Length: 364
Image 1 (cartoon, rainbow, N blue to C red):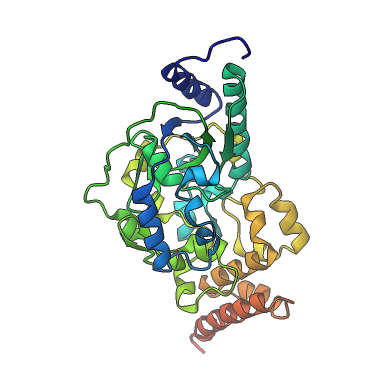
Image 2 (cartoon, rainbow, N blue to C red):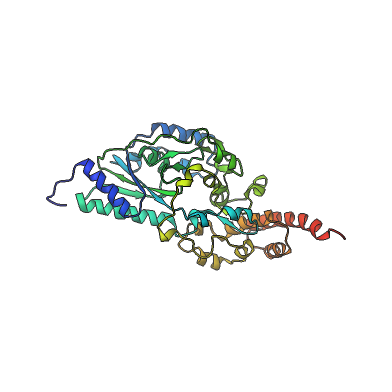
């Protein structure tokens, strides 16, 4: 504010934490921009090809690992965490035991988190501006080359678990991350200690064995990558392992002991919409493109596109128990304009028919 001296850095940091809580963030922390160790790990991960077809992970070079290269003048990163856990009744574990239903990662059931978190961080930045006057900043939420997890670790928001997600002792791992890159000199926080200990529950639970070492995920085997990031065919050997997961995978979080401390979100934007919390696969597979666009408006799912939506559901239908209903809905897509869809439908039909014939022919 013009003519008013800025508060001391410690005072300002305390106020930012308070304003962050008022805006719905469970954690606010402050980190410097030194990420040398994370940079080495990141480039080693890229060198192994673990990013698969996510070329954008390598495209920006050191802008991802050196914040001041992405936003010149950055001195402190404000890191924020917003809880999205829907509570035990909507956690989704039981859906994985119902192969005729579709499992969608819980984070994608509500409004697109990119928009929710980014808008809330922009409001926080404006509140800081009201207090101290204009300052340099940029707001991010999974929207630019940013090493979100290492920055959150440095900011004291939690530690990276063996599944590579951030874990906080008080809130578990069901939260989104966002950042404000600033030119402010603010006191930085101390990282939390790693409390995974000898637990390997997440590694053992991964359906495709994508966690190749503690904290290291080979995206090429990860169901979230296969169903969301991958644009081409899903590798045939991995298809049976996807089960009924059509958009993302929460298995590593479902088994994490620290998530017993998770608390249901109070953000209504993250609550399920359009009945996607436990839908039937055959119903979703019947959606035409206009229905898909309408039902996923404002959702992170929409960026998948109708073609890959059908690709993913076809795999799940192929994994479902033999059913004449499933065979019928698959047959209606055998002439789909997309070669990608047709190929996955053919695969699913072959699996259905191979199991359906013995089942229906028993006793004849």
